[in-house]
Picture 1 (spheres, rainbow, N blue to C red):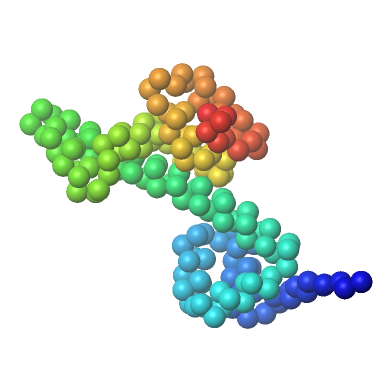
Picture 2 (cartoon, one colour):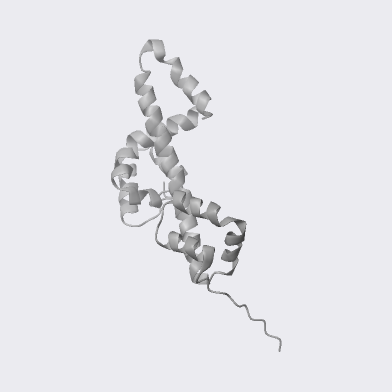
Length: 171
């Protein structure tokens, strides 16, 4: 009987270890990005030999980081456009908002969806930042549409507080 064994090296030192430590410690994505640049491709290649446990941590971090970055981007765009919209609310300045969308390269529909997310959920997500990790970006946009009742958004926020990830099916 021929048996094949898979050996995993546990990374305990070097650039990959330092990167794993940053990920485990919950360091900001920007800091992990900087560390990734600093260790280069050779350091990143060391990650190919991490343990299954470390891979699970990297996987969780990747999902959370990608989702939260999408939400944070949406909140940022929504906030700055909401401020700009207020500043250009007079009849003489109304066309400036559309010009801003064009200059930012943001589709008008997406811009208004981000504004809606900021208006309806921005305060809550800013005061409870851990909730950002519990929403998929598209689900939050759906929940913040005008046609979505306040009660539905409030229920989703409570579910997120209870540790349930809100995806588009739940939204």
